[in-house]
Amino acid sequence: MTYAYSCRFEQTPVFTQLPDHIASRAEPQAVYGFENISLLSTRKYTAGTTVTTRCAFEGDAAPLIVLAKDLQPDARGVQRYGEYLEIVLYKNGVNVWHMRMVDGAVTWKKQLGVEFPVSEGEPHTLSVRVQGEQLLIAADEHKMSVLVEDMYPAFYAGIDACEGICRFYSLEIGEAE
Image (cartoon, rainbow, N blue to C red):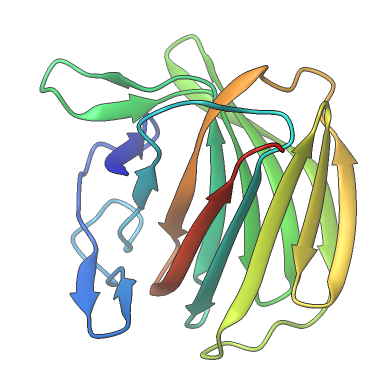
């Protein structure tokens, strides 16, 4: 795993290591008032891969799984990704966003939104299995799927802390069998 950052944010914070998890911090000096931190695989995966994390959040925070098309260093040597999918857990359910670079800026399109209450402060399991162009998603007992017609044939996989304090207790990436 390596630290990597969306082209959307200039800052490059790192997670705080705690006894049983890693966590992001609220950061009033950051552009949006929070840290945005990603840990991504250093190699690409393909269809049939399952990514699972055990995570928790506070308030409006949003722990998420990232599937990034490419990963490359910027001028400072910081690993960046520009086109990616976010599978987001938050207090009102799950969203899937498709982020793209257009004219040097990150734009986004919502691919899926499923609403159900998600309790803050408690660990939850979020999982996505890539089945060709379909993402099979589970958030605790809730299951859903979404078609991504231009799904990447290979992708980097990992986690991201967004919009507040996120805690990650585990991350597993299971390859196609």
